[in-house]
Length: 127
Figure 1 (cartoon, one colour):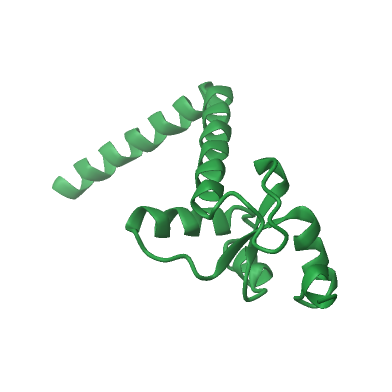
Figure 2 (tube, rainbow, N blue to C red):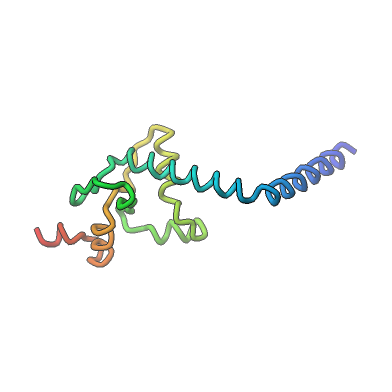
């Protein structure tokens, strides 16, 4: 009898959550976007807020997280295409006080150059 009562309560809670989420979808989406932006800024600041290759530090918007071992596609496959998987992992490591070794901060140019240059940025290829 107790299990049926628990199942009934669980079903009511699920129903309530679905109705709430449907009624407040716009507010929830705005809140998630704001939280995601704040998390990205904090992660970029934690990683040094400048490109580790060329030193670019003028605007955080032009900096991106790079997978040092070139395993970003594998990470996205494991997370069903979630593009924020690196930020989320860095966030967890950052909050736990653990070192971040799999990721580095690169500007868009260095990141694209590294991708096109088989894992080596233009700056390092021409040295």
